[in-house]
Length: 236
Picture 1 (cartoon, rainbow, N blue to C red):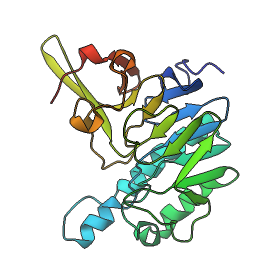
Picture 2 (cartoon, helix red, strand yellow):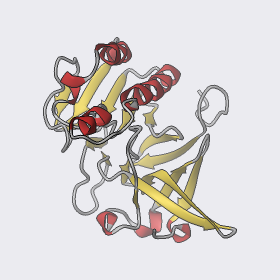
Picture 3 (tube, rainbow, N blue to C red):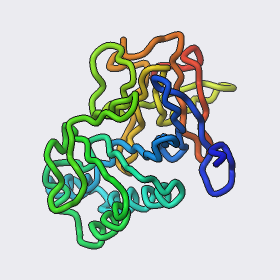
């Protein structure tokens, strides 16, 4: 299958992490073709309902929007395995709070495939009444999936948590987008959830995580991924 095709797939950008081929999809998911594995990070489902309980008026449609986008991605790739890289729910009670209609949608997406919930800082426990395995981290082949990136440079790590974004300036116009942050040994994934933000990859939170010479920010456009060399990036 040609993952760079413009047919029913969103445009993609390919990279390699510790020798494992990874396809960075413009919708914010990573596809590992040799393993038929789809990775997604920081869904933050039921964020709207959590904030509503605290008196903040956020539109209560984040779970519906996030699941619709996830469903489209799964329909395209038909993965044998899905790894959700932590903060799948915005808090420990998010899964129990999720309306039945959304639970049924999620169960339909999970049916017939292996599903792993990596524990995050927002959701360190198994989601209530949902199938799938909850793990602290998951090692497959030459890579390991975990929520928070390890300190320093670690070969083969796929992580989330930091919600990477990047900014460039072209023709006097500033453009800021979510991105995959990557070098040859590590990939930090963008947040997928509808109400999630982004942290500039030049922020000190990313310091020492990547080899500067090999670092690429795979910026997410509307229907394309734009690989950007570190020298083109700008701080916020």
